[in-house]
Length: 489
Ligand SMILES: *Cc1c(COP(=O)(O)O)cnc(C)c1O
Image (cartoon, rainbow, N blue to C red; front, top):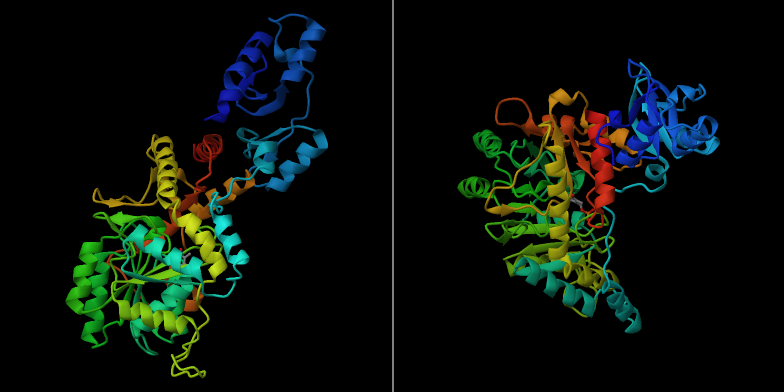
């Protein structure tokens, strides 16, 4: 791994001995011959040196004996296809990236392009398939059955949720959460602005009206002062919201005590969107169990997955009973088909619940892996003081579902620019969620801050999520880190 591309710079006047030592020391397969202004002249490989030695036969002879070659490179604005073409046409494994003065600023390797590092791919264990087989063997393919019961039971144990119902997605869980809290057309619903759109879409499903609340810079979640402003504003209009959708962004718990006491003061229930926060805790209590209802997601990229799925939890048994009823087409107990409410086909299938059983048993391990990945990024990237991240209070624990960081202004790149540059190097990073108050689909919605500039917009501008899959190995993570440092240094 090279930290800094200049580690493999070598002047033309260096000896073969120097070049071999540098190749050995850096463990790279290539050096870059640069002139006194650090402009790229040509590349040198092991093979080039072997040929030079055979021709001159002397370790002290200099690289000046190398023929002038038009160097192969891509410019910083080229995409990864350009690098691929050069590699294929010239049969080389590395291509330098140069700036507009022809100075090398990076190195793309074939391995980077052939073996992309993904953001957060599913990580399936050993047991899942056996529960899926059970479902097939016993013909319990219908959306009810023993896997579902067991998954709900194990999920409740893992989170200490009192009651839960497994659903087809996290979005379905949020939607039914709003329904059981009695949200009706025209009602107000407050919601974190810095989140994925699925937190807020269900508000529109019910023709209710979202009001988005800004983040605070510590946890990146709802800012208590902004929330208080919103409560005061709408109380003055005699229009308090029916619910607050509270997100734990990237798994980091919000300032739950301040937020809860404000919601108690104004008598507004919390719907926790814990889609990203399974396994996260506050005062040793699972996120998702603080709200009147809590929603989780088991989508493919989440910390555990059923390929697609969700869970709604509550201390109130009646709310979960009602959600279960609505999730299965609102059929009443009569033997004939009788419907008093609009129903939904939102129940999780028994087959997918089998995957969930295997996955929930791995939760603690996954949290540990994600936290280790985060810790390594944090220690490797914080050296230069250019990077910030959401912090967990000492009494809380973030599952660090995605390792998210913000770049300080001095870096000179936006989060999106860095995401693009990493993409060129075969690394899948993502920007921070684009705040809801910026989305055209929510353009009618109000947005409330603590008074100053929008924190969520600032986080979006400078933030990015780095590859955080629980199988990410050390070598891959080193590749992400060295590429990122390369880009920003
Ligand atoms: C993933 C996610 C959802 C939606 O969950 P699905 O299972 O994909 O429907 C909702 N909210 C947040 C914050 C999420 O990250």
